[in-house]
Image (spheres, rainbow, N blue to C red):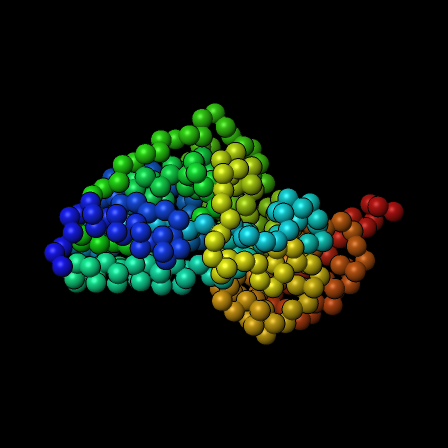
Length: 358
């Protein structure tokens, strides 16, 4: 069989990607010079917090050919993750006895799922054209995935720094296949369609979005509850509310998400009742419970201590409740020093609210 022309090959790749569950695909060259200065300013400002790997890799994130020598084109893919089931997010956020988990984490871990399917896509290409150079990435290396997806025509980077697509909102994952294939580059179809809207900036509970396209991760609830391993700054704890893993506020208010599409894959359906879990029940989990129930979940990687820390903060933010005080007091002698400090803080919050309500 003769080798296909680049344009024909790209059409075949799109079809294979659709069969593998990807919802959109585009191709870009590896030139990210326009994003390098923004990345440099962000790092110098310290907005990456304790994510030291960001600083360690530095500007390499904006230089794909240094990460994978020989890269000529980067195939970017999108995969919708908004669960097809579960309680509406706003209902959970307004119920302080429940814990809010970011919608991306309600089902199975997307890292392995998407990487496996990108590998399958690469093998389909290899069967068609013969051996070629490639590497698959899903949030697993120093890659500016949103910048690459924007250049590949999959959307634009919104003021909250997430990628937005006019036909799909922002509830999707991104993945990349770095290749040495001479594929045609996709047109960058989407300019910035945020206009004057500042809904995402205005809603942020901790004011982590400093302005359009300016995110201070050190104040972001997703960073505080997922990336941060030590104590959560006390001044920010009341603003976290009942969010125990991540935060979706900036996406929930985005007008473009009225076009969001539900996940087609059953892997992203809700597991373990995490769409609206009871905080006291979660706080009672043993480490064995946590590890067993979070098997195959992205939540597992934060570890049991951070899980308890986050729930303790949410319990402290709940209205005064004698049962909450009881479970906090019962847990206090059984946790390590870092978690204990958050439990004591939560107890103080509960006790002060109980006194003021008398």
